Image 1 (cartoon, helix red, strand yellow):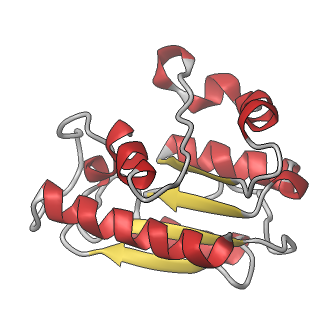
Image 2 (image 1 turned 120 degrees about the horizontal axis):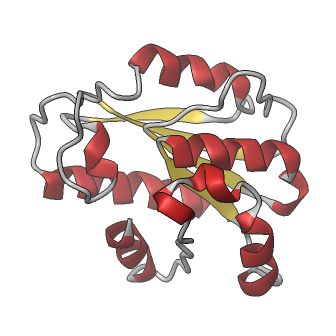
Length: 166
């Protein structure tokens, strides 16, 4: 996810990407507490994640809404039982048009668990793996857009969301 962090940094957005044991966000569900304490003094905090990392970000947001100004989900949705409908912050849900890992029905259905001001944006031609740079993912769809074009669309959507969130 370094590509996104660097693209956002070029636009003046500080981004912190934590490392997790075995690259699984579920191994450090409250890791954001220390990161927010260290980096966010007096700043707007938007938490986000891709796939399982997005589900973990939504879980964190449901338990620490007072620390956050927004939530970004990429090919992700809140797990069952997570209710963010009463939060005061908006969420951005990004979905790859050809994503076959995060079911479109689940991503779209996840909007019902987010605040009413939340939005869904579909990244045309993109697949689940294009939110990261870890190569093709088993069971994913076939992209009909270049990775570079998908990344431009993802970055643009995130920057637009951050512009109205801050």
